[in-house]
Length: 296
Image (cartoon, rainbow, N blue to C red):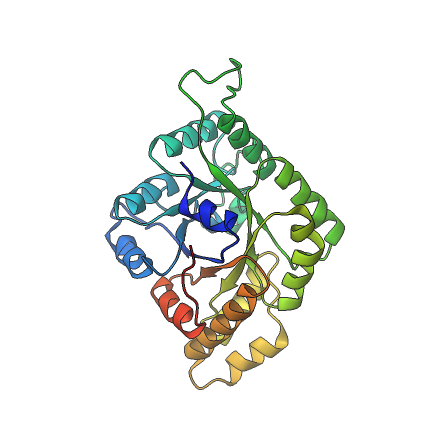
């Protein structure tokens, strides 16, 4: 019943995951073509759920489509848009469809998106969502005591930002997520490996929870400035900004930077999570340049 991702992490092998945004429309064809490029190059593909509060196909549908194409998904569930009954239903539905990996996130503010008049729900946040999955995995019904149609087998993960300046708050939050049942941590983009080293040595290693470090492809100097300004928690350092600014081919320089980070982070954390927004087709090139290979 365990996912390949869970089995690989439990064996202490290094993992590679990649992020894929679902389509903004009714056809999954383009997204599936990109997913096929990632097949056999990553352990799992992470499907976002309304990232940046922008409408896209639901992560549940896209995750099931990946499964049907022989690709293991990590289904993101955001707490922003659904009440607890809807979230509970999605967890049970994912389990019934064979989806075993779920990344629990609170969700970006609707103010970050393109429908700012939308109403956020936030009845749950990520810790409560983790607790709910943990309860379902133990066969516990939220009102009746015991699930009448068997327990779930979900490998739940949580998010973290190693560059958070308030380390005490970060440590407390990670401890709560571990206690709530998180089996792995997937980080936001990491731009300075010193932050990742500190996070692993002082927080994740003592908690005995594996970390998949986020690597983000910066496509240009302008792209990096935009991210620094508008993405919460982003702090791209001056040396990377200068490399992009001075590069004859900024995209290739961005790929080189991402590959260097992936190579370094693989030796610090338990794996890497590769993000290339609207350029997911470049992830295999990053993997190749970083000299990464799948372990099981």
